[in-house]
Image 1: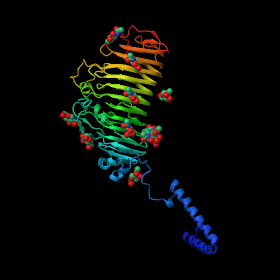
Image 2: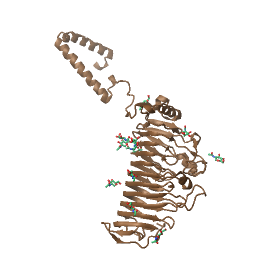
Image 3: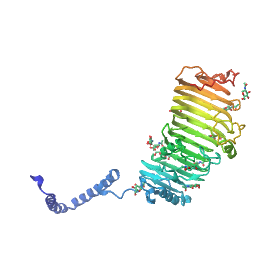
Image 4: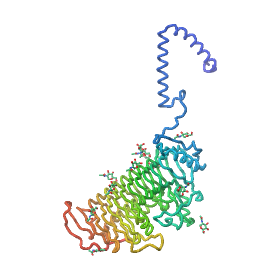
Length: 493
Ligand SMILES: *[C@@H]1O[C@H](CO)[C@@H](O)[C@H](O)[C@H]1NC(C)=O
Ligand SMILES: *[C@@H]1O[C@H](CO)[C@@H](O)[C@H](O)[C@H]1NC(C)=O
Ligand SMILES: *[C@@H]1O[C@H](CO)[C@@H](O)[C@H](O)[C@H]1NC(C)=O
Ligand SMILES: *[C@@H]1O[C@H](CO)[C@@H](O)[C@H](O)[C@H]1NC(C)=O
Ligand SMILES: *[C@@H]1O[C@H](CO)[C@@H](O)[C@H](O)[C@H]1NC(C)=O
Ligand SMILES: *[C@@H]1O[C@H](CO)[C@@H](O)[C@H](O)[C@H]1NC(C)=O
Ligand SMILES: *[C@@H]1O[C@H](CO)[C@@H](O)[C@H](O)[C@H]1NC(C)=O
Ligand SMILES: *[C@@H]1O[C@H](CO)[C@@H](O)[C@H](O)[C@H]1NC(C)=O
Ligand SMILES: *[C@@H]1O[C@H](CO)[C@@H](O)[C@H](O)[C@H]1NC(C)=O
Ligand SMILES: *[C@@H]1O[C@H](CO)[C@@H](O)[C@H](O)[C@H]1NC(C)=O
Ligand SMILES: *[C@@H]1O[C@H](CO)[C@@H](O)[C@H](O)[C@H]1NC(C)=O
């Protein structure tokens, strides 16, 4: 029954044995030296293990942060009293942290780390020269009680809240007149908990327009990357009258039905903007480039221009993958959309406008667009009659021109093209080149046009509408259209 002997006994006997050994060993200097050498080696070894595996015996105090340092000063939301339990309201913690960062602008600004946890908050404002860093499993949760959401004046280029007159709710994360702002992380999430808002909107219980999830106004040098945005009450990411905005590697999610107006990204009167490497699946347009609404947008007069959109996967069951408009009264020009994959959607790429808008949509280049199971692939619609009020000028008609579609492919499309110009708003100088789209119905009029002028270069499938001039691969005229204005639009399928 050796195993029953108590630990203290065994310990004592071991100690005794060691005591007997020590004098013998230490009698030789050589042995002593060897032992010291081994001890030194062993301690280095253990220390290394500590770094790699967190070996418990030698554990140093917990590392301050394993997150990258992107600014000279970094802060942890918990240092400002933040509690990530999903219940405690962290608005003041965010505000205190951002106030501290706002004093560091001249020193390169500051980084606010949001650790893993669920950080409930009311809307708060960002400051210049700051990085908001969302660690893995960090979730900023927007409080869904509307009384915490401040009301703001309508956007000047809209004249009213987008869906209700008068003031509108601000955004969960907001900024005005900022420079050099980064929102990034290890795929942490900003969650707007839009469910309550969508429900109230449907029940007509809201007197003011819902707020976006992230809205940055009159600002420049903005980067939003490596995070997830989800369940916005209204539009998800809304840069308004900004310059130099990059959105990269961002996931944007909302339910694909019954999440009204949850557009993914709405560049609005913005210039020099890049949106790339994003996955967007939402309850309205994936992207909608805008520039103000009717007489208010015309008066404000700020176009959206120089916008590059590439490498996106988008799903929009209710609206379109990438839209321009319908609010485009300040004009939209020089937009490139390439390497876009739109799946299980109602429409893939759409330009929408109406009389009263004024402005223009021009120099729009679509390249390498893939449709996978969409009802209508390419859409231009010129009677999107939604107006802020009755004071719009019906004679203010938009100009639509210089639009090209190159390398358009896909499967499972009902109507590959529906371009509906009108006598007042003809569509000019449209180019198609290299298009082959698999269709779900072998019906004849599935390349639909009205008041469209332009050309097809080389062969395209399905056969183009008669409104377009035909050119061969070498861009030599084969047949000029004599019927640009005939209408072959069929909304029945
Ligand atoms: C923030 O502080 C909390 C609590 O002190 C700590 O657990 C966490 O690791 C820190 N996070 C970062 C990113 O520094
Ligand atoms: C954020 O800034 C805007 C504009 O300055 C202001 O109207 C709003 O009240 C601020 N919001 C908060 C929560 O401080
Ligand atoms: C995209 O972001 C995720 C975290 O959200 C990161 O792991 C990944 O490396 C990023 N990809 C690129 C190409 O930056
Ligand atoms: C980021 O998180 C979202 C939502 O959980 C997930 O769909 C996406 O795949 C993640 N992205 C990366 C790069 O891990
Ligand atoms: C909306 O306005 C009506 C009429 O003024 C008022 O009775 C109602 O309480 C308001 N609702 C909200 C959510 O503020
Ligand atoms: C655009 O913003 C980025 C990020 O702040 C910055 O590095 C870059 O210099 C800016 N570009 C211009 C042309 O100002
Ligand atoms: C996104 O994450 C990747 C991988 O961690 C990193 O290399 C990249 O710099 C990040 N991108 C931005 C724009 O922060
Ligand atoms: C068009 O936009 C691109 C960015 O997508 C920019 O590089 C280019 O300079 C712009 N062209 C003009 C004429 O402004
Ligand atoms: C076209 O876009 C797809 C994504 O939809 C991408 O995988 C492919 O590499 C692109 N092709 C070219 C030639 O850029
Ligand atoms: C037609 O549009 C193309 C771009 O799609 C442009 O290069 C060309 O100059 C335009 N033609 C005319 C006559 O404006
Ligand atoms: C088509 O209509 C436009 C105006 O809507 C007009 O300028 C043009 O001359 C018409 N073209 C033909 C061929 O009738």
